Length: 366
Image (cartoon, rainbow, N blue to C red):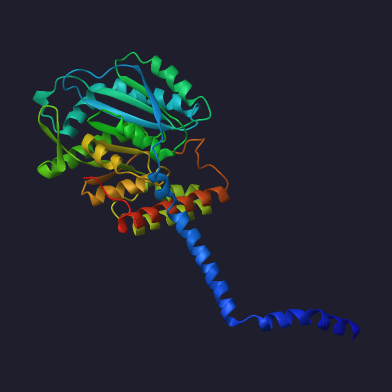
């Protein structure tokens, strides 16, 4: 009994304090918490817009071999973003260059067909423009790229663009694309996960179909040397046909995050493209200029904004299944918690894109 009496005596001041606290004070406290949470959420969601509004990240570029041919020689630019890729980049470059050089004649024919040049007007074989964008790597990515570039003796162009600091894959691709010179520009990941011997042919053939369908729309075309109309078009490589196979080999958390990402892409961005994240995309010169001058996102989800921009500007898009395989050393090979944070960040970016265009914060240059 004494213990109960003592406990009652101790809690009596607390009861009095609760009785003195008015309902209005509690309501104000709850409202304050809600305002704080909403403010934090808005700051988090619009952080990519804040980053995009800042000053651009500088870069330095150097041409290690080759120069642009005179006249109307066709140029296929390959933009390769690289971050800490000193091990995988040389393998990818060697396999890619070996294939491109060996099949230059066939790829020249496909290139001319894709840009709509009549066979009788063919003048020379295709020239390749390799653009390695070192995104502030902490390893020797730039060094291995330089060593490889200095060994190129085929007359093809080999450039290295070094970002002053890490800006994200989107920022690196944007910089490389806007400094490219090709009539067609291919974005390709530095890990070589997409089989270029399969993917490039498919994308060029699909580009031919897409440009032919839109060529008569003069408002959606620009002029390429020789008076050939080359519409603004983009073809995306896709792994959507491999989804069942990847679900069988991936962990449950990765499969859940993959399906969740696809759901939010359809809800917030587009139903048109099933796989926005495959690092193998082909653009015409005019599409490059229009899409990448308007691009804001600098990180992983930049591909989703490209789709949004293309649809808002009526740039025709197409999607083609390509052979793709996992390559050891992925930047997303992290623990489950870190992977969830990356996925949350990509969702945040998509919400930001939807909000900024809907509210008129971001306006498109046409």
